[in-house]
Amino acid sequence: MVSLDEPVENAWMRSQAQCECRRETHGHPGRCRRDLVWEERGQAACPGGWDAHHEGLLAAAGWEATQGCEILCAACHQQAARRPAAKGLAARCGARGPA
Image (cartoon, rainbow, N blue to C red; front, side, top):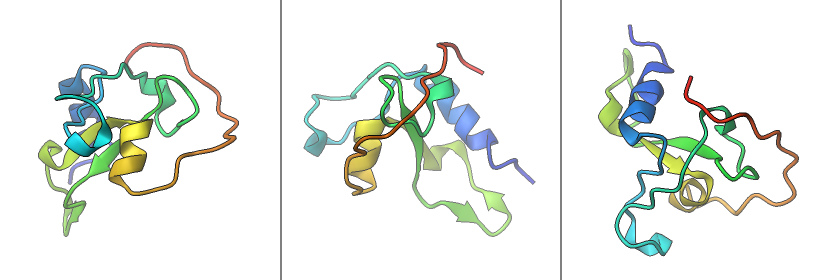
């Protein structure tokens, strides 16, 4: 069985530490490409904050493949997930560098 973190790690490597969003409605032409920081996952208040956006989430035996996982900066992830923007988050921003 595939680890739940493996698709995210694979997608992170594919993204080259940049937002993969290509949604026209997010206000950027083409791919967003905002620089991201591995240690700032889930930390929307950090400049390199990001999260994994999952399409077709879990298969019965675990994660399907990296194809269903997209690395998005915090702003694009909030829009893609249709969540309100994070306000007043007290987040610790980690050092730069992949895991």
